[in-house]
Image (tube, rainbow, N blue to C red; front, side, top):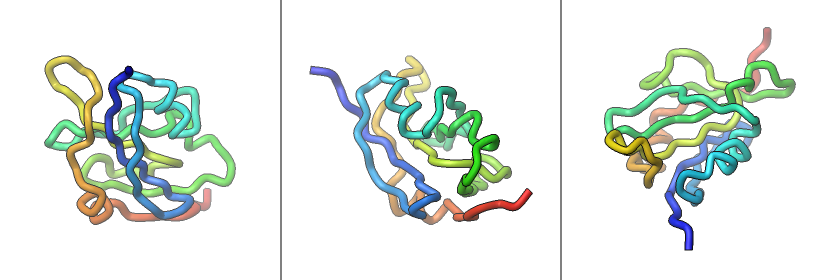
Length: 114
């Protein structure tokens, strides 16, 4: 049985934050969640939770945006995934920040005009 880790999804299309379980170490699930083949870390919280976003999100049409200024001053495109990080092994683990605390830090921007 594969181990699961709890993550939080930041969905700017629904303007909602919700919990989702991922197989530990399965990058394909992160790719699917952010909607792209390439994802990148947009920042790390003091507790070592990491925010992942679609690396090519800015190039997609009909995109929605959010900010999480504690981690990154730039608008972030598309869905974000927050997972716990283990600083010693580099593995993913359960997210530590709560949905409520994360929601207080996220600002929804909707669509941005070029």
